[in-house]
Structures are given as structure tokens and as C-alpha cells.
Length: 382
Image (cartoon, rainbow, N blue to C red; front, side):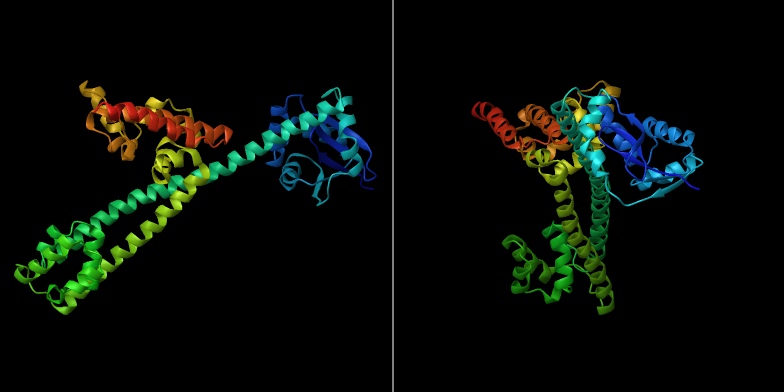
């Protein structure tokens, strides 16, 4: 005849109950909320903690050979580690046990009063919730790493493809490359117009080109030194240009996705740095938490590691800024003030990263005001 016991994990410890709800084995957690939360998290992940092991060993000594639990991961672990038949059951905590948790906590020495029990409950719940949020953000941070790296590779590919198209189409209309500097506009010209003999003012204006570019293209098409391309040759150049344009469209969508990730994971950093730069900083730092733990001086030169190593080797002046030079607060300042601006910005970004990683408080507006105030004396002194 088989004997069945049910293992129930609670806020205060692990209990074994008979089918009738009688407690036959118990193991309380330590008193500290952090240790309780850690034990609960480990059990949720399927680990047999010392409390679980103590209860299981007690059941074995009592002659029980079937154990049930509402934790499927823990059930799998117990099946492997014990000579017991372990079953996963989808049932809630026993009502009687739930009602008696404050009393059991007092008896177990975790608390002295019911008020202390409910305070302990709030503390543990807060820690568990914070841990769950951090775990979720960590998985989202992994997406930032992948997408930012993809954006870099995409930019490299687009630059290479655009240069190849310019060289190829330059056989037909070499002057166009000097007139239209923007890769995307250049590619749009090829896909929409193609042969230089088909150029009209209306077509150029429809592409959104500047007046200077329109005038230059019209004049250049009349006196171009380029060779004539056949329809088949021009069709191949157009096909490549269309593929490159499609990648530019995808780049826009990818940038929007990266921005949404950054705003979700690091709202304070995103408001101050801008979502795209925020994502790049998080990726280069190795995650939001690592970024939050960095000194602001290190954050200031993220992205300028090669220049830093070169300055150490040659004993030259170290770089004053890395990726944060992309921020208008730095690159928009006079050359002599960029180092100061970079230091100010890095300090605020460091505070913002700590708020995002640890407290979740939205403090970006005040940090932006501080940056603006810091910039005023510099501007007035020019």
C-alpha cells in the first residue's frame, strides 16, 4: 500500500502534509528576508534547497513512497535525486495551512507577532518582485546587445553596398556622386530615374532633393562624361540599388525597435542620452547593471578604448570622450568645452543608470535641468 504526502512551499518554509492536511514534516527558512527570497527563487528554478531536502528525508524515514508538489521543476529534480515517486499536481496551497502561517511563523521563531509576520511577507514579496523585474530586464538587455551589434554590422554593409553602387553607376553618370552625398538619396535617384537622359526637374523635386542638388544634377546630366549603359546593364544597377534601399528601410525599423527597448529597460538613460545612444552605451558597457556600477570617468570614454590604449602606450593625452560625443550636449559645444561637457554628461548618465538598475525612480527631468544649468556659465563666458 502506497503512502502519499504533499510538499508545500510557503513564505516561511517547506511543509509536508498528509492528504487530510495534517503537517507531518516542516523546515523553516532563515529569518532574513533576503535569504528567504533566495531559497524561494532557487526552488522555483527546480533546485532542492536544504529545507526541501530535510523534509524529503523526513518523509522517507516515515515510510512515504509517493510525493506530490505544485512545483513542476522541483518535481523533476526530486525524481532524479530520490528513490521516490514524485508527481506534479495543479492544486493551490491548503487553506488551513495558509490560515495558520502567522502562527507557524511565530512557533518557528521567524517572528514574534503577527504584525512582524506581515512585515516579513511584504519584505520578501518586494525582493522577489524586484528580482523578477531584474531577470526580465536582463533578458531584454540581451536583445539590446544583439540588435545594437546588428545595427553596426548593417551600417558597415550599407556603406559597402552604397560605395559599390556609386562606383558602378559612376560609369554612366560620374558627376552625380559629387553632387548627391547622401547614400539614400543617391540610391533613390537610380531606382526612380535610372538613365541620366531621363532627368527632369519634376522628378528630382519628387525625390525631395535640395535646390542646389536639383540644379547640379540638371546641368551635370547634360555635359556628363559618363558612358551610355544598355537597358540590361542599367537594370542590374537598379536591382542592387533597390536592395540597398530596402536595407535602409529596415535600418529605420531596427532603430525604432532599439529605441523602444532602451526606453523600456533604461528610461532615465534614454531620456538624457536619447534611446539609440543609450542602447549603444548599455551594449558597450556589457549591460545596464555594469554600466550603473561604472565610475563616470569610465563611462565618459566608453567607445574610445583604442585611443585610450594608444595614449597609454605613447604617453600622449588620453581621450576626453567616447560614444557620448554623439550627444549634441558634447559635439555641439565649442572645442575647448567638449571635455567639460563630456564629464558633466557622463556624471548624469551614471546617476541615471543607477536609478534605472536599482531603484526604478524616474529622475531624468531633474538631471536634464542640472545639465542645462551646468552649461549656462560655460556659454555665458564665451
